[in-house]
Length: 142
Image (cartoon, rainbow, N blue to C red):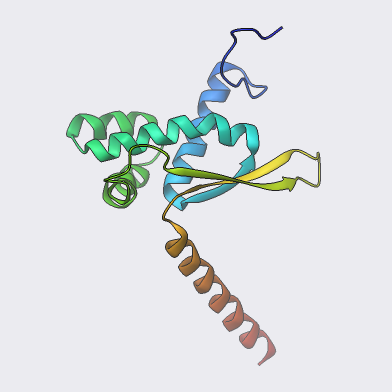
């Protein structure tokens, strides 16, 4: 029985679980959206929200706390410069989890975890990728 056993073990030992969640949090802050399993999405959501709250605080101490958890200095800079200011007037609820169905290899339930308000940046990235692909195709044909 799992009575009163909160939290997600993710089939890993403590250090591996902590490292995996730090990687997920850093990736979401850097790219605005990642696809992973639903359980990892649910496990990383409170950690990402805590980082955004630190970013909204904006103090030197908050920056050092974020730097202690996030893996790269780029992630810390992006958190404080672009991600946190988006949510200045919002009290929590910075993320969306969108289920995408089962993974082909092991039928694990997959989902996107994405930051709210990042749709414009994500569509711009997709447009640039499509233009680059089209340009590459033209060079290949010509």
